[in-house]
Image (cartoon, rainbow, N blue to C red; front, side, top):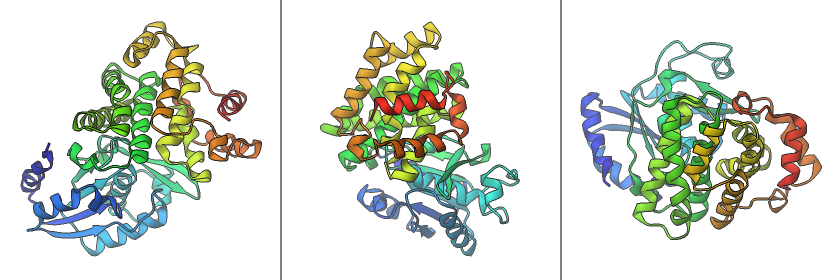
Length: 359
């Protein structure tokens, strides 16, 4: 613990004096990060940006870029969950470019200049964004991934103490996101031996520690989940996510389901769906990491885990189990490239069956 104290050494190494600090609205104080960082940053010029929504939107990025340019910093520090990290990454690199920003976000234009050094300090154990080179950005409810190797944080300070006060519901949602990312990166068509090494460790840690972190949190369980999230982030930085994430985006954009929960909703069914085509050794390796013997046991373990940590597993429990809702989901899933990383081709018919199975 107290890993945060390394921040002073990093700032000294970077010879920074002016800090652009991106945080959540309330999580910065509630996590204990504010108290820790104020002491460490007392001799620096700091501008804090926190006035943005949970879904990283273009207008909020523009607002952040304006603040950034009014206060040209030497370094950027992001303290928070995945949306905070995504916002900081986006502002930092787009501030070095001219409008229209949409062209860079949609991939029409290529990023030409890197941003300032970026330090990522997570206050949740979920997104793993502190270890990835991309950021989720929404434009009119459509999800895009702003990505470049320059966007990978220069430093990640993973201090589990900042997750100790997370409410159970947020711990559950972010934790299932970490586990999902670990599993999805493991079966992704872009997986490598390196990414699978990170995935395997993250799956073992998260599957063994998530329920404890939610229901009877201990420092050990919190630390295990922080490590799992970081490792899952390193895994998806190489292998990317797959169909579960593609399905989650319209669930969040159109129905307000928190990202991690939205990802976890289809994970059990997708486990069964993908198991039918997965290489035998890969599938056995995945089941061993989860501690199960068959794909059916794996799907049951994941569904039971979600219930154990208080997350609904049926769309009807979230008031979106009707045909119209399913159609909205299906119409938007195939707009993202993440679905292409799935080991088994996902068709609209197969997706409809999966959604009916969880309705």
